[in-house]
Length: 433
Ligand code: PGA
Ligand code: ZN
Image (cartoon, rainbow, N blue to C red):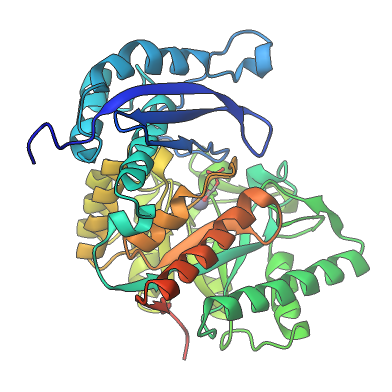
């Protein structure tokens, strides 16, 4: 395309907005020379992996508890914007490469991954506006789309409920459903049923960071029992209509080479802990486990994948941190069979797309995911559909920062219907038969 025909970036505005925990984060708006624009907001994690790109926070005394992001915003104003003005907005790879070079560190610690990602996402949105198509359509030119199968949280623990239980997410995957609306109906029923059980038993504290129930349990296994009961009370067959998906976020309770189930006052060495996880996989209708081990306990990852990888989805989140190079090491070493995809772990749209492509190429299942600190931005719904990733995890079935993503899938479906484009609900690969 000749340079006269390219739509160029004219300016970038960045400012502070607040996420679902009320913490400061960055919204960026990219303005184009034809008057169009695109904007995006970056999310923020709580149970972050050691190898994630750096989220730049000011640490300025008590000002917003040290969590303000003004330095990152200054980096957008003073360093990123002058370098990007005049570039073609459609060349996402060139835009991201430019910002990565300006930063010059391995973990984006100079400019901040939050600064780079806000601009990167806003550029993608602006490019879609420029082409007058929704973002997912810009990301894929295929004519058949897969609506990613949701993984939806029912009970929230770990760092998202002040350690009320050690396991972070007790979720469901409604693999017996054939449409998205059926998934949502099953989720509605199971969420309500779980709430009733917890309330009747006096074990409901409130809702955790991602909208799942904040429980009062004596053991982690109680979460599995409640989930099975809730599925049955709602009229579904556990293991046939719906499976349990766990995110253990195990690095959060991994200390000095051991795993501490704090609520049970048990300190387990890796082999004892492995047996606990294996017994759960054998005794409950669990179809997916994420971060069952800390990221440096690679031996346990390999053992679990070898023993259970043929029948259970094993997802690396903190293990891979959406980093293509790390993922390829995991593919080679058979550490897992799936990878969680979070834009802000790596810090740019292009690198995220590269990681998803590498996963698909090597038959690893990519699961596009939100963070525990989320916003009204629904970019990731488009990312999940547009990349044909097949799975989507954004928290529970309450709170608008979660529902905006579930609802966006419905909007995308409506668009596909109107455009006469084919679509179907993605199949879950590890459904037990
Ligand atoms: P985080 O939690 O956003 O707090 O890291 C989500 C997850 O672990 O998947
Ligand atoms: Zn996780």
